Amino acid sequence: MERKASEMGMNRTGIKTSLVHSKKAIEGAAKAPPSSPGDASAIAKVRQEFSSEAGGLGSVPPPNLKGMAKAAVTLLKGGRATVLMDKLGQRAGFERTGVRLYEAALSKLDVFGTWDGGPSREQLEKIRQDELSHFALVKRTIEKLGGDPTALTPAADLQANMSEGVPKMLVDPRVNLLQSLDGLLTAELVDNASWELLIELARELGHQEIAEDFQRALDVEQEHLALVRAWIAAGTRLEARVGEEAAGAPA
Ligand SMILES: [Fe+2]
Ligand SMILES: [Fe+2]
Image 1 (cartoon, rainbow, N blue to C red):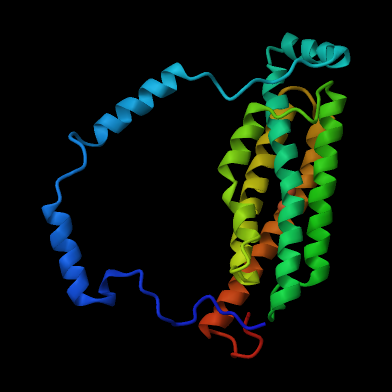
Image 2: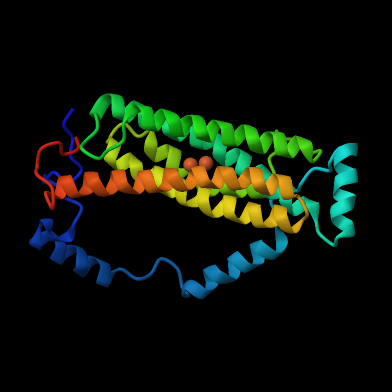
C-alpha cells in the first residue's frame, strides 16, 4: 500500500495559504485585547501553589517478609531499597507496553510492507519477544526482592503518563510504518537509558546478580536501538531519494 508521509497536497494549516485572509487574521489578533489581565507569571504562580498543595504520585508498597529481610540488608549498607523497587515497577510497565508497541508495528508492516534496509517481520517479532522476556525478568526480580509486580509504583505511573502518546501514535490508522518507527525510537532510547540506570543502582545496592541479568537485557536493548535507527535512516533516505536508487522506497 502506497502512502508517503512527504506527499505534497492541499495542506491549509499555514498562514501563507491565503494572503488576504492572513492579513485579516493578523489585524484581528492585533485588535483583540488579551482575554485576561496579567502575564505568564500568574500561571507560574498557580502551578507553584498546586505543586505545594498536592500530594505525591502514590507510594511504593511495603515488601513481604522475605523482602523486608533483603531491604534490611540494603538498609544496613545505608541504601534505600524502595528506590530500586520504584524503578523496577517503572521498567515492568514500560517493557510490557513495549510488547504492544511492536505488535502495533507488525500491523503496520502487514498493511504497508517494508523497504530496502527496513524492518522484516522476523526482526519485529524477535524484538517483541525480547521486550516480553524483559518484562518477565523484571517481574521475577521484583518477586525475588519481595515486591508485588502488579503494583503501580510512582515512577511507573509517571512514565505511563509521560509516554502515553507513543502507543496512541502507533495505533493511529493514518500513520504508516516508517512514521510509526519514530515511536519505537523514543521507546528504545528510554529503554537503554533506564536499564543503564537500573544496573548502576542494583550494583550500588549490593545486588550483583540482578545487575548482571540486567546487563544482558541492556545488551539486547542496544541492538534494538541500532536496528530502529538504521530502519528509519534507510527509509527516510529512500523517501528523500538521496544516496540510494528510488526503488524499494517506503510506502
Ligand atoms: Fe525494552
Ligand atoms: Fe527494546
